[in-house]
Structures are given as structure tokens and as C-alpha cells.
Amino acid sequence: MNQEPSFFDKRTVLAMGFVFVGILGWNFYLSKKYPKTITTAEATPAVEVKNDSTNKNLQVENKAGATEKASSPNDLSTATEEKIYKYEDEKLSFEISSRGMGLRNIVVKSHTQRDGSPVVIGEDLANQYIFETQYKNSEKINFRMDTSVSNRVIGFAQVGGSQIEKTYEIDPAGHKLLISTKVTNPTTSLVTTLVENISKSKSTSFLLPSYDFESLYIGYEGTNKKVDIREDAEVVLEEALQNVSVASLGGHYFTSAIVDESPIAPTITTSIVNNPSGKQAIGFLQYDFADNTRTYNLKQTAFIGPKDLKLLGSVSPQLEGVVNYGMFSWIAIPILKLLQFFYGLVGNYGVAIILVTLLIRVLLMPINISSYKSMKSMQKVQPLLKAVKEKYKNDPKRLQIETMNIMKENKVNPLGGCLPMLLQLPIFIALYNVLAQSIELYQAPFMLWIYDLSSKDPYYILPILMGISMFVQQKITPTAMDPAQAKAMQIMPVIFSLLMITLPSGLTLYIFVSTVFGIVQQYLFMNEKKPSNIMTINAK
Image (cartoon, rainbow, N blue to C red; front, top):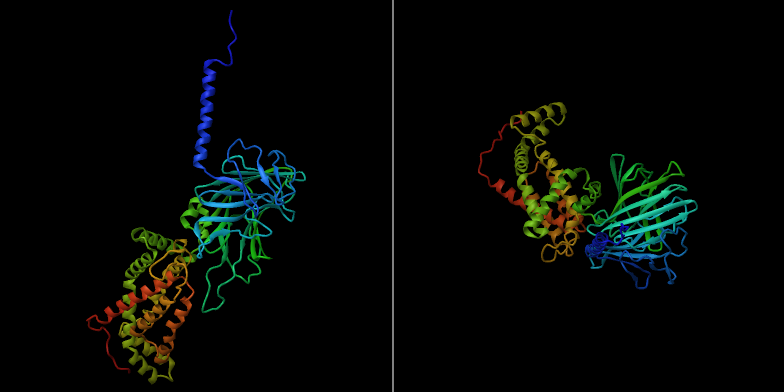
């Protein structure tokens, strides 16, 4: 008599054992790879939530302080109390609000403020939170959130006949969040927000400019736009921008940003609001749905952290534009890489700036030599030009002819001294932007009293030395100027010194070293023993 095969035969039991061991091993691997905690927080200490797949009944704390069990994730009923959940890993910590599932009080752990306090993005936000989801011109959406899966937060909400499921997948390796939002039967346009506090300017003087301010960066329709946000700003964007692919709103060195990968390209509008804590700039990424009976899946890659070009590029190449070096970025980026290369050799960004400065001056030496020779030649023909000017002061046409004859016979180009300096201007602007904006110099010490190359010289020693060196260089450089004009130009070193008082000491260091190099170079040129090619002729 044949027996029916038993479900619990040896092979089945062995297979179930392997599966069980595999599940345990995988959970152990995840717990080691992603050692984080998600907690609920109020002004009082947070309640820690166990981070494993068995945590089906999540304990949460509402704003009133009462503790309750969260409903099942499939329960889409609207919550009435705001609940705050806290996430933390080695790179970031932040709070997620159940209202809109926006982020606030984001701490960037890789850096500190200049006074040693934590770097906080989205601190004291009042109305909108960063990456918050809401329907246009509607009340805040209340989500019920599930945090039972490692490094993932899922929110569920129902607004009338519309259902929304929003998910954060948090990458603990690099300031990156993947945001997916599933919208079924949308009632109107859906909006994602970016928010940044507007800091008060440290200076409003023309002679003492402040460069440390907030900015908005938008990539849209194959182009981009950057807007600096000043303390007295009333608007950020004059009009809405469509087909947005990248949006970043942040401070000088830190930002929050979104790269949109949705089937619907959003439109961005902005607003500036006044709150008890101060002014805030808000960017609204608006998704317009063509059919309110369909289901839409929105995809975004979000970034929170320092404006590090390499880090931004690792999250998405589109984010590299957030570090905006201006129209000469094609020069600025190689300069930045050169600066990083020298830092890797010497371990000091101040020394790296000096080495970059010297290398650039050496590479530009042929241009400088040409400029010096041209200016020297112009200086030697000045007596001839002055005599011709006096002789033909009442005959402009003849004066022009005789002047050109003198230039031609002596092989002097009147633009020869200025043109080489104009060719150097793009390099100076690019280097200025690198030294003024790069996170690499943020709190980077040099030596002695220079403990932060991204901040001003606390004792103004470098600006004073720079002004003195510029004065010396001006004195020993040949000039074709009228004596009265030359005397008036002597005030320029003073003006430059005043301009550099509040600018980064790294930038002042560059100009000082460059000027000293120029003095040495000028001294060598002046002592060069070569016969002059200038012909001595008499004015006709």
C-alpha cells in the first residue's frame, strides 16, 4: 500500500531550515550595515523605537505628550495630532513631521559652525518643512508613518477620495534620500517644498561687502539660474519656472536639494515669509496632474549636506551645478582640483593656495614679460608723445598721424600693457570664486592667527600686508600715465585693502603672494642688462 507523501519529509524540513537561517543572517547583516535608530521626539527627550522587522506596533509620541499605538499602515484615516520622528546615522540626524512628512532640524555631522555649534539646516521652521508634501492651497496633509523597515520611512494619508503613499529611503553612506510619492485620485496639484532661513547680513557697506548669504539654484529646460537671497529681499523669483529638473535652496556652504525624476516635470514658484524667528525663503515644486482619476508615481533624489562638488556629483551629476563658479567655471574646476592635489601633498590648504598661486604666476610669466616690455616701451616714448601733443594741440588730425608714426617706428603697441592683464582677468575671477565658495576651505587653518581660510583675517594683518605690497609694486612698475593720474592711483592699494577686510583670508593670501611674486619679477626685469630697442627720434 502506497503512503501519501508527508509535507514534513526530510528535504522539506532541511529547506525550511536553510531559509530560516538565511533570513536570520540577512537581518543580522542589515543591522550591522545600517546601525541607526528612529525615534519620536518632542521638546522632551525622544522615545527610542526598536529598529527591526518585527516592530509592527510602533510606539509614537504626539505633540500633546500622550503616547499611543500607531494604527496599521493600511489605515489611511487622518491623524489629528502632529507626531515627530527622529532619524540618525553617522552622517545626518533629522526630524520628520507627520504633517506633510517634511524634515526639520537637520544636523550635518561632518561639519560644525565656526563657533563650534552643530550645523543645522531647517532650524526653527514655522510653516513649511523641507521636502514637505501638500496639496496646493490646502491644509497640511496628516500622514500615518511606518518605520519598521531599516532606513525607510513610509507614510500613508487620505484626503477625501485621494490616497497618498510617500516613502523615504535613506542612504546612510552619503547625505542622500530617495523619495517616492504615489498619488491616487489627486484632488489638485501636489507641492513639495524647500525652505531656508535668511540670515542677517554682517555688513551692508560697499567697502566692507558680505559674501555669506543664501541662494536658490534651479536647473530647468536645459539651462540654469542662480539667485542670491539678501536680507532685504522681498522676492526670490519674479515668475514661475517650468520643467524643473534640479532645485537647491541653502546657505553659502550647506544646502538641501532635489533632483526630479518624475514622469511629470514640476514648476517652481517662490515666496519669502516673515516668522517670529525671522525671514524664510520657500520654494514650491508643483506637480500638475492631467487626470484626477489616475495613479501617479513621483520620483525624487534628495540631498542634504555640504556643497562639496565631489559629494554632490556622487549623488547626481545634475547637482554639481549647485556649486556655481560662474561663467568661468571651466577654469575654476581645474583650479579647485589643483588646489586639492597640492593639499594632498602638503596637508595644509594655506600652503596649497601659495603653491597654486606660484604655479599660476609662473605659467603666466610670458604674458607678464610681454606686458612689462610694452609698458617700458610706452614709458620711453612718452617724451616724444608729449612733444608731439604740444606741437599739434590745435590740429587733432595731424596729432593722430604723428602719434601713430612714433608708435610704428618704435614698435610700440599702446594696448600691449593692458591686454595681457585682461587675459589674466578670467583666471583671477575663477580663482576668486574657488577660494570664496569652496567647502574645502571652510574652517581650514593655515598658520599662526589664520585658523579659518574661509573667514576674514581676525587681525587684518593680511589685508594690510597686501596693501603695502601693492603700493610697492605700483611704485616700481613703469607707467605711461600722466603724473597727476599716477598720483591719484596711489589710493588704490588702500581701497583694495578695505575691500579685503571682510573677505576670506584665503583670497587675501592669494593676492598677497601674487603681488610679492610680481615685485620679485619686476625687480628682475628692471635689472636685466639688455640694450633698448627703442629708437630715439625727434618730433617733426
